[in-house]
Image (cartoon, rainbow, N blue to C red):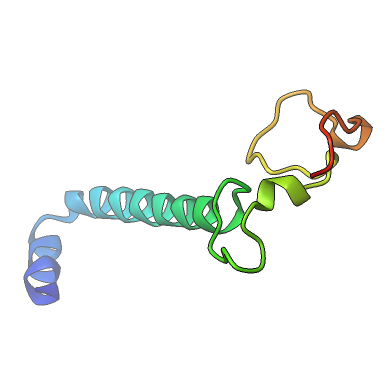
Length: 82
């Protein structure tokens, strides 16, 4: 499989940027999906010890990837303890 790709790239060098950008996009999408699966407070992998992880989050903890004009250190608790 890789021999065929290498042969095509040697005969058509204009395809190199295509392979680089497609490979980079696939890598970045896999990294983002793994970040969502591991760092998102809505996902619970351990249902015995922590069945509701969103209740144990601090109000000053940032969980979004990109927050525009949001200072999480100044937020106050707006939900009750369970």
